[in-house]
Image 1: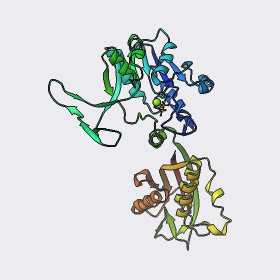
Image 2: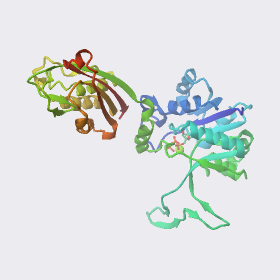
Image 3: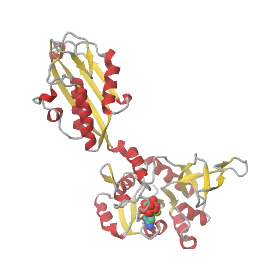
Image 4: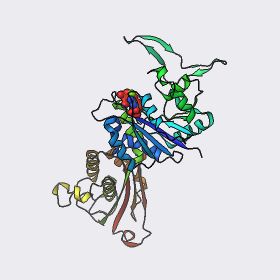
Length: 392
Ligand code: CTP
Ligand code: MG
């Protein structure tokens, strides 16, 4: 199999991002951007080695990551421009590698599929980049914010058909071609902004494979929000909740915040909504924030007969303070009677509203206990719930 090495320029200053911490050390889901990027290549079955070019201030910190990332065989000093940093990494790449990938450290959400496509493209054509067709109208604008011209996005003429694309990384090359491309660096000065640009200048044909809209480059602060959303499902957490309440006369039956006509109701300090209690515990459990008894003690008079939907709203606020947002909830109620199916939609809506999530992310199911045990004898009800949370 072809030996593949990833070269990762990580020596930039992140000026457009503008924070005191270099953008590559900003954490997403508790993990620095650079680590997200490295893990994409570390975990890719076709990548054998990784070389990083870092700025001198961060060299020791990046070198420490070698303990965590086995494929990270070299961490070298970068240069003043991205291209110079790539050149430094290139000099440290193993001579045995047949395909070299160059990937911006600032693109932490690169997918395994995209890396695959680029490696296959580089093997097949020698030089290959991922790119996305432009869908907005493109204008050339001068320093006074005046439009100079509209640049056509595509020309459909049979002989000279073309269309505009935006280039991403990783850009993949057969090793000899990347070396040949970088031989041109000093001739071209600072004019090229990507590796393929140098290859083109060297007369090397570069092919395009499908890019990925999620492969966002962290450039401006607003890119961070996009990346958090893209990466969030990769570090979601789950929690389980369980609750049981006794049934008795002279109590309204409240389930999922809905008062359901029935000859008995659940007994408890609050409204004893067993379903919401299980959901609260699942959410708190996912964030490792204790349980409902800890947050809403049953010896606190303020909680007497309180609607459990209020607990749920407070649980959401508690999660929020710790940086979490509910993503989805699934619950199973064990009740011999009454039939809850007619109230399901309303209950799901109540939970979705309290948590500020879409109704499609809340599921409630119910089952009888086939007349067995305390649920079967209609002495009480049980509810199980599972919840997934994602970082804000
Ligand atoms: N890069 C590099 N060496 C440089 C400049 C950039 O290794 N002298 C790297 C960056 O660390 C980044 C990638 O090249 O991973 C793409 O560059 P860019 O997004 O422009 O990052 P910065 O140069 O750090 O940001 P800015 O241009 O806003 O200062
Ligand atoms: Mg830059």
